[in-house]
Length: 320
Image (cartoon, rainbow, N blue to C red; front, side, top):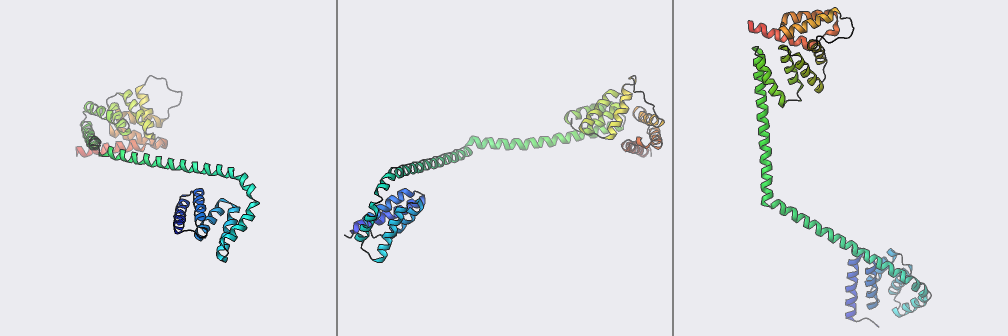
């Protein structure tokens, strides 16, 4: 008995739904709809081909054989009644096996259905959360209070940059003023200014060094030693090490020294440093340091010699 037009339309509708479910990964529900479609329209070849592919995917050998036989019958022109009769005879032997495995298959189907539902619910929950977060962030960014806070922070950053530039320029001016007072032998004023500068530039070894030299020139050797030690902690140089040793001898003249023989070169070197620091006698200081270097090259201190030469040249230029 051939199906009615209504049954054929219904079968095709189920076939389309089954294809959509297959694309979503819902294999078992797709198989169920295709089987219903073939019951309504047994000679529906497209549904049979689709069902064959799904049976092969899930590994249902019996379903695969039945679909192949149905397709062979449709292609050879055998009536569906004959094909059904043959299928019935072959299937009777497997009825028991199917009945035994039916509960397990049903459990598997239910488990897969539950898993699909759980995955779908989780995806929907994540999507809702993402949309809510995006909306909340957008609302927060558009909030007038947030906009005002952003503008305030931006203005604060700009203001901080301007203040830092102003402080740097002020420190530079102070340093020039201190150097001026030093050049005109107003050492106490130079020290007062350098002490203010050092409060803002505690990590600058050159500022500590300059302050140490000023202290030494006014015979405050202990404070000069402290400044050179601070500078040496930040950046170690051989010149500072030698200055520290020389200042130790000047700051603690009564401290017992190690029993070592003082060479003639060392005596000349110490004499030159003392003349430079205590009496600011550049010519004699340069003479004794050069003499120490001639006797023993290990006392060569390029930094001290260069400083003395430069200062000596400045004095000569000022006199001329």
